Image (cartoon, rainbow, N blue to C red; front, top):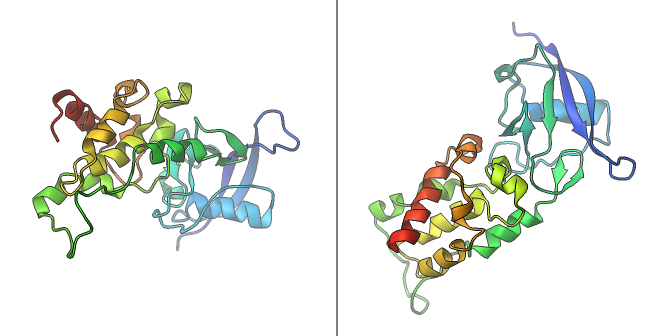
Length: 238
């Protein structure tokens, strides 16, 4: 029979009404190996400290709301199992980097979504409203299938060292969103998106560290997508 074990979580707290700087606090919880970090945080909030603040929604890796740094890596708390972490030491949990910290594990996501909106993340078809659906071959769909998986969790963008130091950089997630439509055979705004990303804060700021690809909880080949956008800009061919 699998038994619960005592696990220590070291959480980086920030209470804006009393703190000038974030600080670390430790909590001990009883957790099974198959419990998630999200379960442990919920247990702390419900049983030990109701002021602990974090985002969550679906709890199944679909909404992307509970992205945070766990043991120094960007992950979704709802997909990170206790058994996959070393519990002989405290599990560190902190907010993702590069975005304004609001409270505890919650950051202001507006700069992230501003960049996302700027790349026109929607289909811009040619001509008038059709009288039937716009058909697409399986091959054409496969061209951008990988980048349709993005859940806007910001794990990739907030793992990027360029984004940490340059608040104007679009970041990987926005470029992934643009890629999804640039290579869609039904779309007519590829040139416009490429011009937006040709800005000095666009794709050319990427330093190909692969942090974004490693951080993506959906397994998107983020760095590959960014390179494909760069090639499209150079050869103006999608």
